Length: 345
Image 1 (cartoon, rainbow, N blue to C red):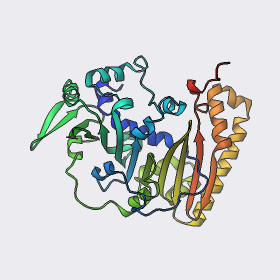
Image 2: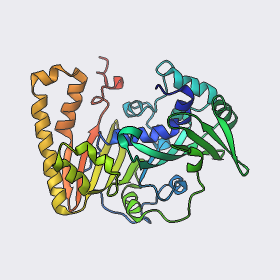
Image 3: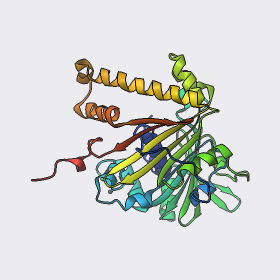
Image 4: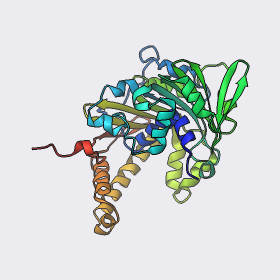
């Protein structure tokens, strides 16, 4: 069922963070050496994260204001921050007209807490998600836009706006410059109030490694729903390696016209880290051999072949102690960006 224009607009903030996290899982940050663990006092966690539920097993963060400074560069275009084309997405263009909000201009920071789905095949990647966004919001316009198909739920003196969908979405304004959104079953209840308490130490330790980056995501993977491992049922070796992963960190750092991304997996032992590194390196060799087959190349476009060639040839695989890293410099040329076209004579 196609997503309605109303819901598309209302969850634009949460979707922005989620999409960056998902994309970064494929395009991996390049670094010269493994990320060292850092104390919270040296790498303070961004304040917007402090208002998220403390029990979430996964957290992502995006500093759009920092990335927006890259305006005019191919990287800004690649990240969708160079300004929206009104003709490219009529639903979003209508949302901007109705609310006065455009994330390429008005969003400064966003963070999302997410929980894996109990039945991934049926429910999608996330069972529920809560997002906090900072920026400039025209509250009267946004409220009126939500009420086109949604309704207001009063909780004490606080007004919460709920919009139908699959899943439904709810949001409330925390201040003139901050909004909270939730998506999932009974989204109004997902907006809090949250039980007081410190964040899961395992998640906090992962966040301490990456909190200085403008783009990052972390997740505990040692207690995933059993349905997640059904994806590896045809390969017991891969399933066992997946079960050996305790946590993931995802980091993004812009540099000139490139986006440096890295995915680090924390294994439960050094032995398993070595096994994973060896297996992934083997997959890269198999992929290179498959891509060299003319039959395989005929089934893909030229851009797809170029992208896969870049991923297989330029991605770096390293490991240290219990950590395995996949890393890559993502360039506009690699992604077929028009801004990366040959310069004029």
